Image 1 (cartoon, rainbow, N blue to C red):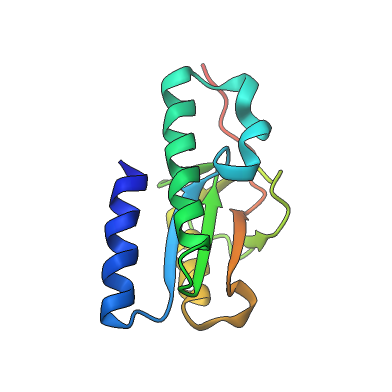
Image 2 (cartoon, one colour):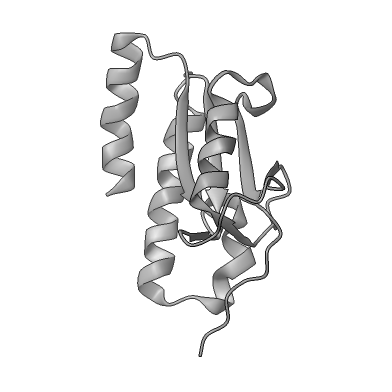
Length: 130
């Protein structure tokens, strides 16, 4: 799904003059696959591989981009104000939707995100399975 959709997005982004693509991906995709490989089900691994293929299309497209990976998005977390983006592709952790949105907005014009794959986290503990 992601690879096919991204191919069309890239085509139309070039034709319409889009200045920057921002793609939300997942820790476990692309070059971070080994971080989670032993802890995920096969169907999830396939999704991560598809997202990794979409990431590759973006990075080779010639269009300015920012790829933001996250591990777990928590809709119930209030904005912490401590969320950050890292170029360390082994970063895992939960992040709230509001913090992820704030980081995304920072990447719209931010040169620090330009043509980078970043991992979003606010350092909050991961939820446990009960």
